[in-house]
Image (tube, rainbow, N blue to C red):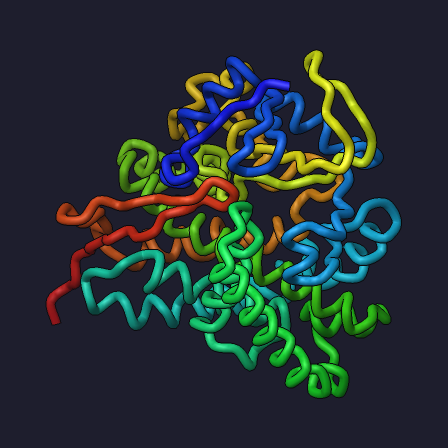
Length: 389
């Protein structure tokens, strides 16, 4: 197998040049700095992710399992299906439309009520973070947490699950965050049992899942349900403001807000990678991959594969996105996809561009991005006009 060394810091700041090189020269490559084999072709990610007998999600020694517990994302077959079915009543398109959308609209409007008179904000911290966190509090049932706590523990778990270099401080912070979530679950359980609702906590209790399953799945939902929507909200707004002709197309109705969000999610994949354990020997592109090693399905690379997407490095809201793998490609397709689509494309984006007149990027501080396993904006400063009086 080809060994490819990477500069981890450069890869975190911008993985796309290295991923493009891997696609061209070593689509199956061992990267010692990440202690994993990377699959970077779109076709390989799509086809191999479905081979759960070979590329197993069951990773008892993996970072996520060790730090957060064995959630449904780390199970295959019936074990995965049964837990996925148990949380479906909280995540389905029907529930999102009937229950969550009105709550998303109310909380987003309240955030904008506070921001609108200011004339400026930092999008990640001031808008995207609380909008995503308030939605997640409702969906998980952890309404006893603050938005700031949701964001803090989510980031701690995301950092822990991407800690492939083994930084002990990152691991300790992640452990502290998971303990905080367990405490809040315990505090809420009696109330949810007394008055069942559509939250993840409630529907799992109603389905008879045990305490360890409930705990691990809610941690999974927070780790994936806060950072990714937060970053996609701020990132999509930044992308549209950076491409005014495409923003104009959205405003005219030529392009939907959903197309804008999903193109951003292809272009700057908030979930850039998903790990698997190789359960049995296999051969790909003439390369032997040994069992029990880590394999990374590089979604961020697949979404920029030149053989699938023309001008793949370009943000284009009118492109055909049917082959994008932003939410995954196999049985582990993101269970929260309907929640994210509703929150971002049906609520936050249209409200932001309606309520903040002449919204624009601040000229004095360009936006910055970071991450490769999970990627998003670090800050996006914006301004808008405040009507007199």
